[in-house]
Length: 523
Image (tube, rainbow, N blue to C red; front, side, top):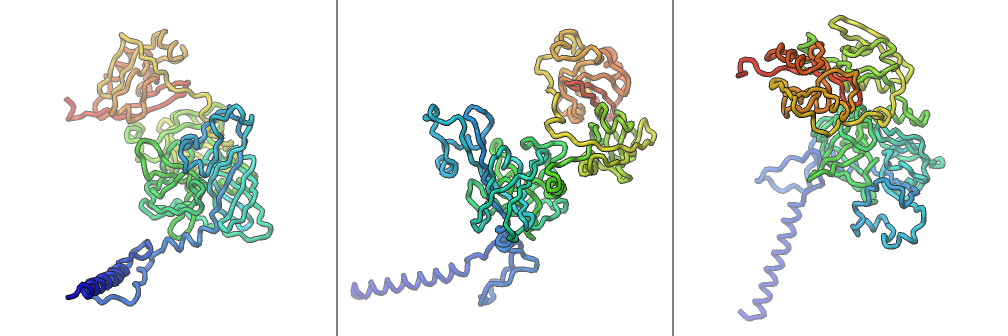
């Protein structure tokens, strides 16, 4: 065979191989990601002329996104900042990142002497339209401190927005733009209470000013109580998702596969090596606040004025309750609504307006949405006997007001030389000497024993007892000193439920229920 014919034959083989490869590659090309995959064809079946139709009930994420994106907006907030005003800027951590500087121009740190006394800064976020006449939901921290807020639609139209009102307790803000008679696209609001763990969700927003970014994941958990900004930890709870949420996603919608808003993307966990941990505000929590913001520009929630704990097994046993439903009243705010109505420390609230209360979060969920001035009926047990009161609700303070005046426990070591322990309860206590009182700022009126240490994994630790508390009574018997403490502990046996009264740092009364471990297995 001549060299020319050999070369021609080689080219023919290569050409046939390329064509065959393109055919095979076309058959292996996957269709767009579906919520439910189409059934696979048997290996022996002939190749279909076209791709099979999606399985019944399948949802194409692309269809959901295409219908939703027109109602998702980009928010740019302009604020005025003094160079020495302090305050954390989340973008400082990216100061040396050239990619981030591309979007957020920063002054040269070497040119500080020539910098103006005040400078205007811009930060980005997301939001979504909830009405055709221009109301926009977003996070409060997206527009906090802004002197100007610009809202851009996905078609490029830009509006200057008015901040109608904000709710710091759940980090919510309501904006208003004027579409000048234009009917704007909106997103329907879903029901976050019906979300299921493992359900698909879609996040849309503008991370790092990369507009219309879409990520998908699942609901990782519900009712997460995590400290986020200035939110009220007792009121706010969040949806956890592994759908990617980044800087700039804040305020954007978290959608279910029907395109309904089930949450407002809010924060990410960046501690340690965490990945795929994002949080969104449930839309049901935002809905009632949004309505009040639209009406009056502020949110007012009902407030009882009590601190409470859930009923655990030890509390159920000690109080001879049929189940663990209800809450135990730890303390009552002086001159608050509950105190004025006659609620006392130690009461067990079992019903609100005739409906059984499961736990503290359930009670809060029934009271907080009510308006101040409304009345609620509380029913429960007091010293084992039924009681009922009618409480006129006040206005719930902001989270910062609720914690004002409280302080953490001291870090000094306890008074040496006089410790005693209860191995059963896992608590080590010490005598309240004058020196210890002075160091821990414990008033003379408080009589008891100082908690010097709590054994990790003990019943006391599980109940919430920590170092720095002063135990004043065990099973309602005062323990003014070490001898009384030892006698009280001696009287309880394995398997008994124990009630401990204590005073926390700051003078706050607390009650703990725990069960003494042991029984037949105790040595």
